Image 1 (cartoon, rainbow, N blue to C red):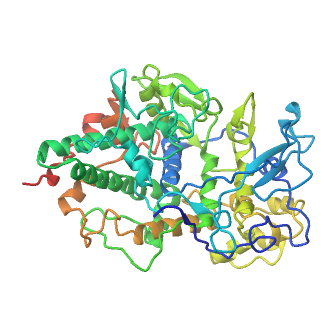
Image 2: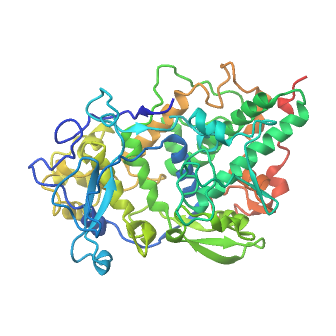
Image 3: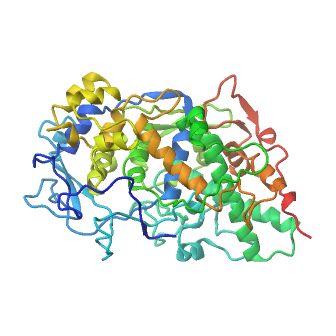
Length: 542
Protein backbone atom coordinates (compact mmCIF):
# COMPACT_ATOMS: atom_id res chain seq x y z
CA UNK A 1 0.00 0.00 0.00
CA UNK A 2 1.38 3.42 -0.96
CA UNK A 3 0.97 6.97 0.39
CA UNK A 4 0.87 5.79 3.99
CA UNK A 5 2.70 7.24 7.00
CA UNK A 6 5.92 5.71 8.18
CA UNK A 7 5.79 4.22 11.66
CA UNK A 8 7.79 5.28 14.70
CA UNK A 9 9.83 3.17 17.09
CA UNK A 10 9.98 6.10 19.50
CA UNK A 11 7.57 8.95 20.14
CA UNK A 12 8.15 12.15 18.17
CA UNK A 13 10.17 15.11 19.44
CA UNK A 14 9.08 18.48 18.02
CA UNK A 15 9.36 21.89 19.67
CA UNK A 16 5.62 22.51 19.51
CA UNK A 17 4.68 18.86 19.85
CA UNK A 18 3.37 18.80 16.27
CA UNK A 19 5.95 19.58 13.57
CA UNK A 20 8.27 22.44 14.56
CA UNK A 21 12.01 21.63 14.58
CA UNK A 22 13.25 20.95 18.10
CA UNK A 23 15.79 23.01 19.98
CA UNK A 24 18.22 21.90 22.66
CA UNK A 25 16.68 21.28 26.08
CA UNK A 26 18.02 24.63 27.25
CA UNK A 27 16.11 26.41 24.49
CA UNK A 28 19.28 27.15 22.55
CA UNK A 29 19.39 26.34 18.84
CA UNK A 30 20.86 23.02 17.81
CA UNK A 31 24.42 23.15 16.42
CA UNK A 32 24.94 24.11 12.75
CA UNK A 33 24.59 21.04 10.55
CA UNK A 34 27.60 22.08 8.46
CA UNK A 35 29.78 22.69 11.51
CA UNK A 36 28.96 19.20 12.77
CA UNK A 37 29.85 17.51 9.47
CA UNK A 38 33.16 19.35 9.08
CA UNK A 39 34.06 18.62 12.70
CA UNK A 40 33.23 14.90 12.79
CA UNK A 41 33.40 13.74 9.15
CA UNK A 42 36.08 14.03 6.47
CA UNK A 43 36.24 13.87 2.67
CA UNK A 44 38.72 11.04 2.12
CA UNK A 45 37.97 8.18 -0.26
CA UNK A 46 39.07 5.32 2.00
CA UNK A 47 38.03 1.98 0.52
CA UNK A 48 36.93 -1.37 1.85
CA UNK A 49 39.26 -3.69 -0.06
CA UNK A 50 37.09 -6.77 0.58
CA UNK A 51 33.76 -5.47 -0.72
CA UNK A 52 32.89 -4.09 -4.15
CA UNK A 53 30.95 -1.03 -5.26
CA UNK A 54 28.14 -3.45 -6.21
CA UNK A 55 27.41 -3.90 -2.49
CA UNK A 56 26.89 -0.17 -1.93
CA UNK A 57 24.83 0.08 -5.13
CA UNK A 58 22.54 -2.73 -3.98
CA UNK A 59 22.05 -0.94 -0.66
CA UNK A 60 20.82 2.14 -2.49
CA UNK A 61 18.60 0.11 -4.80
CA UNK A 62 17.01 -1.65 -1.83
CA UNK A 63 16.34 1.72 -0.22
CA UNK A 64 14.58 2.83 -3.41
CA UNK A 65 12.51 -0.36 -3.30
CA UNK A 66 11.32 0.29 0.26
CA UNK A 67 10.63 3.98 0.56
CA UNK A 68 10.11 7.22 -1.33
CA UNK A 69 9.55 10.52 0.44
CA UNK A 70 8.39 13.65 -1.36
CA UNK A 71 9.49 17.19 -0.55
CA UNK A 72 7.30 20.00 0.70
CA UNK A 73 6.68 22.98 -1.56
CA UNK A 74 7.19 26.50 -0.32
CA UNK A 75 9.78 29.24 0.02
CA UNK A 76 13.46 28.54 0.55
CA UNK A 77 15.17 29.10 3.88
CA UNK A 78 18.01 30.79 1.95
CA UNK A 79 18.05 33.86 -0.29
CA UNK A 80 18.72 33.57 -4.02
CA UNK A 81 22.37 34.49 -3.38
CA UNK A 82 22.74 31.77 -0.70
CA UNK A 83 22.43 33.91 2.40
CA UNK A 84 20.43 32.93 5.51
CA UNK A 85 16.98 34.54 5.85
CA UNK A 86 16.05 36.46 8.96
CA UNK A 87 12.79 34.53 9.25
CA UNK A 88 11.94 30.85 9.48
CA UNK A 89 9.60 28.72 7.38
CA UNK A 90 8.13 25.39 8.45
CA UNK A 91 8.68 23.75 5.04
CA UNK A 92 12.50 23.90 5.09
CA UNK A 93 15.69 23.87 7.14
CA UNK A 94 18.73 26.05 6.61
CA UNK A 95 22.27 24.68 6.66
CA UNK A 96 24.07 27.78 7.89
CA UNK A 97 27.65 27.91 6.61
CA UNK A 98 30.34 29.47 8.82
CA UNK A 99 32.45 32.25 7.27
CA UNK A 100 35.63 30.18 7.56
CA UNK A 101 34.26 27.10 5.76
CA UNK A 102 37.12 25.63 3.72
CA UNK A 103 34.93 24.89 0.69
CA UNK A 104 31.92 27.18 0.61
CA UNK A 105 33.72 30.39 1.59
CA UNK A 106 35.32 30.51 -1.88
CA UNK A 107 31.87 30.89 -3.49
CA UNK A 108 30.54 33.14 -0.68
CA UNK A 109 27.90 30.52 0.08
CA UNK A 110 26.47 31.12 3.54
CA UNK A 111 23.31 29.02 3.41
CA UNK A 112 22.12 25.72 1.91
CA UNK A 113 18.43 24.88 1.79
CA UNK A 114 16.94 21.53 2.88
CA UNK A 115 13.35 20.89 1.82
CA UNK A 116 11.39 19.13 4.54
CA UNK A 117 9.55 15.89 3.78
CA UNK A 118 5.83 15.81 3.15
CA UNK A 119 4.15 14.68 6.37
CA UNK A 120 0.69 14.01 7.73
CA UNK A 121 0.17 17.67 8.64
CA UNK A 122 0.68 18.71 4.99
CA UNK A 123 -2.10 16.43 3.71
CA UNK A 124 -4.62 17.38 6.41
CA UNK A 125 -4.29 14.01 8.11
CA UNK A 126 -5.42 13.88 11.72
CA UNK A 127 -2.30 12.00 12.85
CA UNK A 128 -0.30 14.19 15.22
CA UNK A 129 2.56 14.72 15.91
CA UNK A 130 3.41 14.88 12.21
CA UNK A 131 4.96 11.83 10.59
CA UNK A 132 6.37 11.67 7.02
CA UNK A 133 4.60 9.83 4.20
CA UNK A 134 5.95 6.84 2.26
CA UNK A 135 5.00 7.00 -1.43
CA UNK A 136 6.28 3.47 -2.14
CA UNK A 137 4.96 0.10 -1.12
CA UNK A 138 6.50 -0.82 2.23
CA UNK A 139 7.75 -4.19 1.02
CA UNK A 140 10.77 -5.63 -0.73
CA UNK A 141 8.84 -6.26 -3.94
CA UNK A 142 10.96 -4.89 -6.82
CA UNK A 143 8.83 -1.74 -7.00
CA UNK A 144 11.85 -0.01 -8.55
CA UNK A 145 11.04 -2.16 -11.61
CA UNK A 146 7.24 -2.23 -11.54
CA UNK A 147 6.31 0.98 -9.73
CA UNK A 148 4.22 1.41 -6.60
CA UNK A 149 1.06 2.76 -8.22
CA UNK A 150 -1.35 1.57 -10.90
CA UNK A 151 -0.52 4.68 -12.94
CA UNK A 152 3.20 3.94 -13.04
CA UNK A 153 2.58 0.27 -13.71
CA UNK A 154 0.38 1.13 -16.69
CA UNK A 155 3.09 3.42 -18.11
CA UNK A 156 5.89 0.85 -17.98
CA UNK A 157 3.98 -2.14 -19.42
CA UNK A 158 3.87 -3.07 -23.09
CA UNK A 159 0.67 -5.13 -22.61
CA UNK A 160 1.95 -7.75 -24.98
CA UNK A 161 3.37 -11.14 -23.94
CA UNK A 162 3.90 -9.90 -20.38
CA UNK A 163 6.68 -7.52 -21.40
CA UNK A 164 7.81 -4.17 -20.04
CA UNK A 165 8.24 -1.31 -22.49
CA UNK A 166 11.70 -0.78 -23.96
CA UNK A 167 13.43 1.50 -26.42
CA UNK A 168 16.00 -0.15 -28.66
CA UNK A 169 19.18 1.91 -28.84
CA UNK A 170 21.97 0.57 -31.03
CA UNK A 171 20.53 -2.94 -30.84
CA UNK A 172 20.16 -2.92 -27.05
CA UNK A 173 17.06 -2.64 -24.88
CA UNK A 174 16.74 0.27 -22.44
CA UNK A 175 13.77 1.82 -20.66
CA UNK A 176 11.92 4.30 -22.90
CA UNK A 177 13.34 7.81 -23.05
CA UNK A 178 10.51 9.98 -21.73
CA UNK A 179 11.35 13.51 -20.64
CA UNK A 180 7.85 14.06 -19.25
CA UNK A 181 7.63 10.74 -17.39
CA UNK A 182 7.86 12.31 -13.94
CA UNK A 183 11.24 10.71 -13.29
CA UNK A 184 13.88 12.99 -11.81
CA UNK A 185 16.41 13.98 -14.45
CA UNK A 186 18.76 16.90 -15.02
CA UNK A 187 17.29 19.58 -17.29
CA UNK A 188 20.15 19.29 -19.77
CA UNK A 189 20.23 15.49 -19.78
CA UNK A 190 19.92 13.92 -23.22
CA UNK A 191 17.99 10.99 -21.82
CA UNK A 192 15.45 10.46 -19.05
CA UNK A 193 14.53 6.80 -18.80
CA UNK A 194 11.11 5.72 -17.63
CA UNK A 195 11.60 3.42 -14.64
CA UNK A 196 9.38 2.09 -11.88
CA UNK A 197 11.00 4.46 -9.39
CA UNK A 198 11.34 8.20 -10.07
CA UNK A 199 14.98 8.04 -8.89
CA UNK A 200 15.97 5.52 -11.55
CA UNK A 201 18.13 8.09 -13.37
CA UNK A 202 19.86 9.30 -10.20
CA UNK A 203 23.34 8.09 -11.17
CA UNK A 204 24.88 5.45 -13.49
CA UNK A 205 25.12 2.62 -10.93
CA UNK A 206 21.42 2.80 -10.10
CA UNK A 207 20.43 3.27 -13.73
CA UNK A 208 22.47 0.22 -14.77
CA UNK A 209 20.70 -1.94 -12.19
CA UNK A 210 17.34 -0.58 -13.35
CA UNK A 211 18.14 -1.57 -16.94
CA UNK A 212 19.36 -5.02 -15.92
CA UNK A 213 16.19 -5.91 -14.03
CA UNK A 214 13.97 -4.61 -16.83
CA UNK A 215 15.86 -6.88 -19.23
CA UNK A 216 15.65 -9.75 -16.74
CA UNK A 217 11.87 -9.41 -16.54
CA UNK A 218 11.54 -9.49 -20.33
CA UNK A 219 13.93 -12.45 -20.53
CA UNK A 220 11.81 -14.29 -17.95
CA UNK A 221 8.48 -13.71 -19.63
CA UNK A 222 9.94 -14.50 -23.06
CA UNK A 223 11.05 -17.90 -21.85
CA UNK A 224 7.85 -18.50 -19.88
CA UNK A 225 5.96 -17.86 -23.11
CA UNK A 226 7.97 -20.55 -24.88
CA UNK A 227 7.01 -23.23 -22.36
CA UNK A 228 3.46 -21.96 -21.75
CA UNK A 229 2.23 -20.85 -25.15
CA UNK A 230 -1.34 -20.64 -23.85
CA UNK A 231 -0.56 -18.00 -21.23
CA UNK A 232 -1.92 -14.53 -22.01
CA UNK A 233 -0.21 -11.18 -21.38
CA UNK A 234 -1.52 -10.74 -17.83
CA UNK A 235 -0.54 -14.23 -16.71
CA UNK A 236 2.96 -13.88 -18.15
CA UNK A 237 3.43 -10.44 -16.61
CA UNK A 238 2.28 -11.46 -13.13
CA UNK A 239 4.36 -14.66 -13.12
CA UNK A 240 7.43 -12.75 -14.30
CA UNK A 241 6.90 -10.09 -11.67
CA UNK A 242 6.54 -12.70 -8.93
CA UNK A 243 9.82 -14.36 -9.95
CA UNK A 244 11.73 -11.06 -10.16
CA UNK A 245 10.44 -9.98 -6.74
CA UNK A 246 11.58 -13.30 -5.31
CA UNK A 247 15.04 -12.88 -6.85
CA UNK A 248 15.36 -9.40 -5.33
CA UNK A 249 14.41 -10.80 -1.91
CA UNK A 250 16.78 -13.74 -2.32
CA UNK A 251 19.76 -11.57 -3.28
CA UNK A 252 19.00 -9.27 -0.34
CA UNK A 253 18.51 -11.85 2.41
CA UNK A 254 20.92 -14.53 1.16
CA UNK A 255 23.81 -12.44 -0.13
CA UNK A 256 23.55 -8.76 0.88
CA UNK A 257 22.37 -8.67 4.50
CA UNK A 258 24.84 -11.30 5.80
CA UNK A 259 27.66 -8.96 4.73
CA UNK A 260 26.39 -5.72 6.26
CA UNK A 261 24.73 -7.24 9.36
CA UNK A 262 27.09 -10.19 9.84
CA UNK A 263 26.10 -13.85 9.58
CA UNK A 264 26.28 -14.38 13.33
CA UNK A 265 23.95 -11.47 14.03
CA UNK A 266 21.64 -12.59 11.20
CA UNK A 267 21.34 -16.00 12.81
CA UNK A 268 20.75 -14.62 16.30
CA UNK A 269 18.10 -12.22 15.00
CA UNK A 270 16.33 -14.96 13.02
CA UNK A 271 16.96 -13.39 9.61
CA UNK A 272 18.78 -16.27 7.95
CA UNK A 273 17.41 -17.95 4.85
CA UNK A 274 17.34 -21.73 4.37
CA UNK A 275 19.07 -23.71 1.63
CA UNK A 276 16.37 -26.33 1.09
CA UNK A 277 12.64 -26.53 1.57
CA UNK A 278 10.32 -23.83 2.85
CA UNK A 279 10.95 -21.25 5.54
CA UNK A 280 7.49 -20.62 6.98
CA UNK A 281 8.20 -17.57 9.12
CA UNK A 282 5.13 -15.47 8.27
CA UNK A 283 3.48 -13.74 11.23
CA UNK A 284 0.22 -11.96 10.36
CA UNK A 285 0.40 -9.85 13.53
CA UNK A 286 3.48 -7.95 12.30
CA UNK A 287 3.32 -4.58 10.52
CA UNK A 288 5.83 -4.27 7.68
CA UNK A 289 5.60 -0.48 7.43
CA UNK A 290 8.96 1.29 7.31
CA UNK A 291 10.03 3.08 10.48
CA UNK A 292 11.05 6.74 10.49
CA UNK A 293 14.12 5.79 12.52
CA UNK A 294 15.18 3.46 9.68
CA UNK A 295 14.49 5.73 6.72
CA UNK A 296 15.46 9.10 8.22
CA UNK A 297 18.45 7.93 10.21
CA UNK A 298 19.94 4.42 10.39
CA UNK A 299 19.82 3.36 6.72
CA UNK A 300 21.17 6.74 5.62
CA UNK A 301 24.50 5.70 7.17
CA UNK A 302 25.12 3.72 3.94
CA UNK A 303 25.95 7.07 2.29
CA UNK A 304 29.41 6.60 3.76
CA UNK A 305 30.02 3.83 1.18
CA UNK A 306 29.89 6.32 -1.72
CA UNK A 307 33.01 7.29 -3.67
CA UNK A 308 33.87 10.34 -5.79
CA UNK A 309 35.09 8.45 -8.85
CA UNK A 310 34.11 5.11 -10.36
CA UNK A 311 35.92 2.78 -12.73
CA UNK A 312 35.09 1.68 -16.26
CA UNK A 313 36.42 -1.80 -17.11
CA UNK A 314 36.79 -3.34 -20.56
CA UNK A 315 36.23 -7.00 -21.40
CA UNK A 316 39.80 -7.90 -20.35
CA UNK A 317 38.95 -6.43 -16.93
CA UNK A 318 41.39 -3.57 -17.40
CA UNK A 319 40.49 -0.09 -16.19
CA UNK A 320 39.96 2.04 -19.30
CA UNK A 321 38.45 5.15 -17.74
CA UNK A 322 36.46 6.63 -14.90
CA UNK A 323 33.30 8.61 -14.34
CA UNK A 324 32.70 11.15 -11.58
CA UNK A 325 29.61 11.03 -9.39
CA UNK A 326 29.29 14.80 -9.08
CA UNK A 327 29.10 15.12 -12.89
CA UNK A 328 26.42 12.47 -13.38
CA UNK A 329 23.67 13.31 -10.88
CA UNK A 330 20.34 12.75 -12.65
CA UNK A 331 22.19 12.42 -15.98
CA UNK A 332 23.06 8.83 -16.79
CA UNK A 333 23.56 9.18 -20.54
CA UNK A 334 27.10 7.81 -20.09
CA UNK A 335 25.73 4.24 -20.09
CA UNK A 336 24.56 4.66 -23.70
CA UNK A 337 28.02 5.49 -25.02
CA UNK A 338 29.90 2.64 -26.71
CA UNK A 339 30.55 -0.23 -24.31
CA UNK A 340 30.02 1.93 -21.23
CA UNK A 341 26.96 0.00 -20.04
CA UNK A 342 28.98 -3.19 -19.54
CA UNK A 343 32.00 -1.15 -18.40
CA UNK A 344 29.98 0.45 -15.59
CA UNK A 345 28.72 -2.98 -14.48
CA UNK A 346 32.16 -4.60 -14.55
CA UNK A 347 33.62 -1.56 -12.84
CA UNK A 348 31.21 -1.84 -9.92
CA UNK A 349 32.17 -5.50 -9.40
CA UNK A 350 35.91 -4.84 -9.61
CA UNK A 351 36.34 -1.60 -7.65
CA UNK A 352 36.38 -1.63 -3.83
CA UNK A 353 33.56 0.40 -2.33
CA UNK A 354 33.94 3.24 0.13
CA UNK A 355 34.58 1.99 3.63
CA UNK A 356 31.75 2.24 6.15
CA UNK A 357 33.33 4.96 8.29
CA UNK A 358 33.24 8.70 8.96
CA UNK A 359 34.23 9.71 5.43
CA UNK A 360 31.80 11.38 3.03
CA UNK A 361 33.55 12.23 -0.26
CA UNK A 362 33.50 15.61 -2.00
CA UNK A 363 30.78 14.42 -4.38
CA UNK A 364 28.36 14.19 -1.46
CA UNK A 365 29.77 16.56 1.16
CA UNK A 366 30.21 19.63 -1.08
CA UNK A 367 28.99 18.76 -4.58
CA UNK A 368 25.67 16.98 -4.07
CA UNK A 369 23.48 17.88 -7.08
CA UNK A 370 26.08 20.52 -7.90
CA UNK A 371 25.64 23.43 -10.25
CA UNK A 372 28.69 25.40 -11.39
CA UNK A 373 30.95 23.61 -8.94
CA UNK A 374 28.85 24.20 -5.81
CA UNK A 375 26.45 21.64 -4.38
CA UNK A 376 24.89 20.62 -1.10
CA UNK A 377 26.14 18.55 1.85
CA UNK A 378 24.56 15.08 2.09
CA UNK A 379 25.91 14.29 5.56
CA UNK A 380 24.48 17.58 6.87
CA UNK A 381 21.17 16.66 5.24
CA UNK A 382 21.34 13.23 6.92
CA UNK A 383 21.65 14.85 10.34
CA UNK A 384 18.99 17.42 9.44
CA UNK A 385 16.55 14.76 8.28
CA UNK A 386 16.32 13.52 11.86
CA UNK A 387 15.38 17.02 13.01
CA UNK A 388 12.90 17.36 10.15
CA UNK A 389 11.07 14.14 11.01
CA UNK A 390 10.97 14.69 14.77
CA UNK A 391 13.34 11.93 15.78
CA UNK A 392 14.27 11.82 19.42
CA UNK A 393 17.84 12.49 20.50
CA UNK A 394 20.58 9.88 20.42
CA UNK A 395 20.32 8.77 24.10
CA UNK A 396 16.74 7.62 23.47
CA UNK A 397 18.02 5.49 20.57
CA UNK A 398 20.66 3.86 22.78
CA UNK A 399 18.06 3.10 25.40
CA UNK A 400 15.64 1.71 22.81
CA UNK A 401 18.12 -0.95 21.66
CA UNK A 402 18.72 -2.11 25.24
CA UNK A 403 21.97 -0.38 26.16
CA UNK A 404 20.48 1.81 28.87
CA UNK A 405 19.87 5.56 28.91
CA UNK A 406 23.12 7.57 29.16
CA UNK A 407 22.68 9.95 32.08
CA UNK A 408 26.02 11.69 31.52
CA UNK A 409 28.60 12.34 28.82
CA UNK A 410 30.81 9.69 30.38
CA UNK A 411 28.11 7.08 29.79
CA UNK A 412 28.55 7.55 26.02
CA UNK A 413 32.01 6.03 26.32
CA UNK A 414 30.26 2.65 26.38
CA UNK A 415 29.50 3.02 22.65
CA UNK A 416 32.11 5.45 21.28
CA UNK A 417 35.69 6.61 21.90
CA UNK A 418 36.41 9.03 24.75
CA UNK A 419 37.99 11.71 22.53
CA UNK A 420 34.83 11.78 20.37
CA UNK A 421 32.68 12.27 23.46
CA UNK A 422 34.89 15.18 24.50
CA UNK A 423 34.39 16.81 21.10
CA UNK A 424 30.61 16.31 21.24
CA UNK A 425 30.52 18.26 24.51
CA UNK A 426 31.86 21.31 22.67
CA UNK A 427 28.77 21.49 20.45
CA UNK A 428 25.80 20.27 22.48
CA UNK A 429 24.57 21.68 25.80
CA UNK A 430 23.81 18.23 27.23
CA UNK A 431 24.07 14.59 26.26
CA UNK A 432 20.27 14.64 25.80
CA UNK A 433 20.63 16.97 22.78
CA UNK A 434 22.87 14.88 20.50
CA UNK A 435 21.43 14.21 17.02
CA UNK A 436 20.72 10.49 16.46
CA UNK A 437 22.37 10.20 13.03
CA UNK A 438 25.60 11.75 14.29
CA UNK A 439 25.58 9.64 17.45
CA UNK A 440 24.97 6.42 15.51
CA UNK A 441 27.74 7.18 13.03
CA UNK A 442 30.22 7.84 15.84
CA UNK A 443 29.62 4.48 17.54
CA UNK A 444 32.27 1.78 17.45
CA UNK A 445 31.23 -0.95 15.00
CA UNK A 446 30.05 -4.30 16.32
CA UNK A 447 32.59 -6.94 15.31
CA UNK A 448 31.64 -8.76 12.12
CA UNK A 449 29.16 -6.08 11.04
CA UNK A 450 29.29 -2.66 9.37
CA UNK A 451 27.37 -0.78 12.07
CA UNK A 452 27.48 0.31 15.66
CA UNK A 453 24.97 -1.33 18.01
CA UNK A 454 22.20 1.24 17.53
CA UNK A 455 21.98 1.25 13.73
CA UNK A 456 22.59 -2.50 13.66
CA UNK A 457 19.51 -3.09 15.80
CA UNK A 458 17.26 -0.67 13.87
CA UNK A 459 18.20 -2.04 10.44
CA UNK A 460 17.92 -5.65 11.59
CA UNK A 461 14.49 -5.00 13.11
CA UNK A 462 13.27 -3.45 9.86
CA UNK A 463 14.40 -6.38 7.72
CA UNK A 464 12.98 -8.80 10.29
CA UNK A 465 9.55 -7.17 9.86
CA UNK A 466 9.93 -7.14 6.07
CA UNK A 467 10.64 -10.88 6.12
CA UNK A 468 8.27 -12.10 8.82
CA UNK A 469 5.39 -9.71 8.12
CA UNK A 470 5.21 -10.18 4.33
CA UNK A 471 2.95 -13.00 3.13
CA UNK A 472 4.68 -12.68 -0.26
CA UNK A 473 8.12 -13.49 1.19
CA UNK A 474 9.63 -15.86 -1.33
CA UNK A 475 10.52 -18.79 0.97
CA UNK A 476 7.00 -19.28 2.33
CA UNK A 477 5.29 -22.54 1.46
CA UNK A 478 1.89 -22.11 3.06
CA UNK A 479 0.43 -19.36 0.87
CA UNK A 480 -1.83 -19.68 -2.21
CA UNK A 481 0.82 -18.02 -4.38
CA UNK A 482 3.81 -19.92 -2.91
CA UNK A 483 6.42 -21.36 -5.26
CA UNK A 484 6.71 -25.10 -5.58
CA UNK A 485 9.85 -26.62 -4.09
CA UNK A 486 11.19 -27.15 -7.61
CA UNK A 487 10.62 -23.48 -8.48
CA UNK A 488 12.17 -22.32 -5.23
CA UNK A 489 15.23 -24.43 -5.96
CA UNK A 490 15.73 -22.52 -9.22
CA UNK A 491 15.31 -19.12 -7.58
CA UNK A 492 17.97 -20.03 -5.03
CA UNK A 493 20.45 -20.54 -7.88
CA UNK A 494 20.23 -16.86 -8.86
CA UNK A 495 22.79 -14.33 -7.66
CA UNK A 496 23.43 -10.77 -8.77
CA UNK A 497 26.27 -12.22 -10.87
CA UNK A 498 23.63 -14.28 -12.72
CA UNK A 499 21.72 -11.09 -13.52
CA UNK A 500 24.87 -9.35 -14.76
CA UNK A 501 25.79 -12.29 -16.98
CA UNK A 502 22.28 -12.83 -18.39
CA UNK A 503 21.39 -9.20 -18.98
CA UNK A 504 24.60 -7.34 -19.70
CA UNK A 505 25.38 -6.52 -23.33
CA UNK A 506 28.28 -8.92 -23.76
CA UNK A 507 29.72 -9.79 -20.36
CA UNK A 508 31.63 -13.08 -20.43
CA UNK A 509 33.51 -13.13 -17.11
CA UNK A 510 32.35 -12.33 -13.59
CA UNK A 511 33.16 -13.39 -10.04
CA UNK A 512 30.57 -15.61 -8.36
CA UNK A 513 30.00 -13.17 -5.46
CA UNK A 514 29.87 -9.70 -6.99
CA UNK A 515 29.44 -8.09 -3.55
CA UNK A 516 33.04 -9.12 -2.81
CA UNK A 517 36.06 -8.03 -4.81
CA UNK A 518 37.92 -10.46 -7.04
CA UNK A 519 40.34 -12.70 -5.13
CA UNK A 520 41.77 -16.23 -5.08
CA UNK A 521 38.65 -17.33 -3.21
CA UNK A 522 36.37 -15.34 -5.53
CA UNK A 523 37.98 -15.56 -8.97
CA UNK A 524 36.68 -14.46 -12.33
CA UNK A 525 34.47 -17.23 -13.74
CA UNK A 526 32.89 -17.76 -17.13
CA UNK A 527 29.31 -16.54 -17.28
CA UNK A 528 28.17 -19.88 -18.68
CA UNK A 529 29.27 -21.46 -15.40
CA UNK A 530 27.64 -18.72 -13.29
CA UNK A 531 24.31 -19.08 -15.10
CA UNK A 532 24.72 -22.84 -14.85
CA UNK A 533 21.63 -24.98 -15.22
CA UNK A 534 19.11 -22.33 -14.12
CA UNK A 535 15.81 -23.28 -15.73
CA UNK A 536 12.20 -22.15 -15.90
CA UNK A 537 10.97 -25.69 -16.62
CA UNK A 538 9.36 -25.98 -13.15
CA UNK A 539 6.94 -23.24 -14.29
CA UNK A 540 5.74 -25.26 -17.29
CA UNK A 541 1.99 -25.96 -17.18
CA UNK A 542 0.00 -28.30 -19.42
